[in-house]
Length: 248
Ligand code: ADP
Ligand code: MG
Image (cartoon, rainbow, N blue to C red; front, side, top):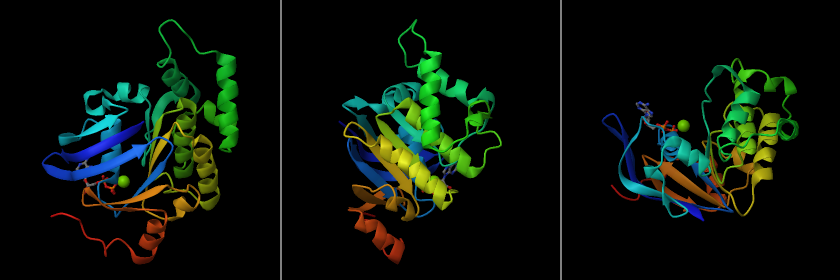
């Protein structure tokens, strides 16, 4: 089981952002993607999730043998793709508890309903694991949340939806060290052989807490280098500049 991305080219407006990107994320593994600002990391994550601003011009994304690019956003989600955003959106007027409950309801067969008691038990357990105050259940999704609270909330949604492929886009940005540890523990709790992770980060620090199996470098719309966890340390030391794209 895996997500396999082959020779992906994508643009926004007239600007080509992804320029022949290859990446495979098998279940049971954590793959980190690092790279300079503007490399196309968020673009990659949003294209996998199905953001409609981006146009895929060629290449493929295959998840467990199915063509992801043929699926609508909600189909991708129901088939197990989850994206924790770099910049989570605020949704005024919709409480956190109702938002997650609605997402879970959508996954049930017609006519079946969420058991409210079991739902809140599960929700509170996961909020406790993320050290989130219970008052966040009643607050509108991300409205007035601090940067760190928004990131925690993304991980809460992820834990509740139990996705097969988790994509985390710079979840570490805006987190202090305590929040970083809490969020990483949440992610590590979800690690298992039936789940794959794409962890996007600009800094090596996150990877001290979420140990990746493979580290990839994304620069100028391509994966230009892949290696083990030691590659992240090398990047921390030398920066991205000494790496150059494999092809012109
Ligand atoms: P990263 O996440 O690696 O920092 P992004 O994927 O956000 O990079 O951006 C890659 C490039 O695409 C950048 O040059 C950025 O300015 C451009 N880009 C991304 N989204 C848009 C958009 N909605 N409109 C125009 N340009 C965009
Ligand atoms: Mg980004």
